[in-house]
Image 1 (cartoon, one colour):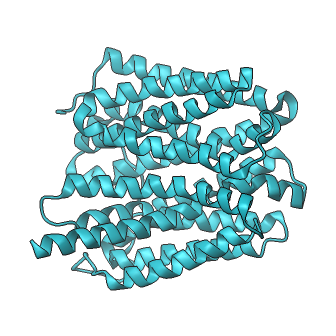
Image 2 (cartoon, rainbow, N blue to C red; image 1 turned 90 degrees about the vertical axis):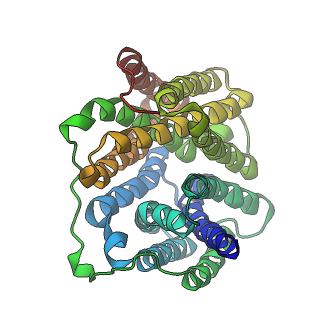
Length: 396
């Protein structure tokens, strides 16, 4: 019993470290309006600065996504915390948009290093037989951290001095504490190898996975694209179209989408994978419809509902997608297939968001948002139709 208690304590501590790192990736979200005022750049530049993060994540997943299996979990996670700290320093010292690019790229590197390694580490530290509970801890740490970032920055920017500096100073202090926590936890990879043995991973799709991967990838792409729009341009919409100048409110709206995702992912167990993915697609479509209504009628209540419904849909769809492709993949190709799914998902964060930024100039923020919604609705509807005609060949 004491060993179980110690195992869960270590599991929760590693989850807290995971959450701190991921919070840094969304910390700038409510602050982009202030950066626009300070540096005088356009809404397109906001979306590009935001999207640079995804390119950093994809680069790490492709280049060294399996590094923690080789050199150990703790060295990779310490490197991730180091990248997160350097990102915070870039934002603290930013005197031009170049620093924001650097900060976002380093933030993407930290997330790429953490995404796989921290998930595995949290689950490995849990007591034997606690896999399901540990999986939920990892999920909550990941999405909860992403949600806490804008919430923390919004509150500090609204109610405390130095809005462009204090959030990152606080995050640096949290990162320092996370390093101390991580150093107190044991390594779980017993046979460590030199760094030079790490090889880039090439995403691969065995023939038996393709039927499952297609709808799973589309749903993942749309879910992450919805998050991308919420975290990059929703603060501008709230301020310019709805007159919401309170940055704490902007941060809370974004945070709600991530918290709703935790609820959606938690529901996959009771619902089963076969039902979770199509239901997630339906909720994503509902979230997109609510967002369209919010843009058309300029109603804050619909923005909030869109965050809740779309976030829950993203959680259901993405966790269902992960489970489905993992089960359909051969054991010796599973990591490569999951990496491919993450690459598609993070492409969803970057490419559509930049498209929205390009359209803001000619058609305005609301028009660009409606075009984005129409495109994503077509994609998620095609995935839902495919799943209706060809249900997932999974056992749960």
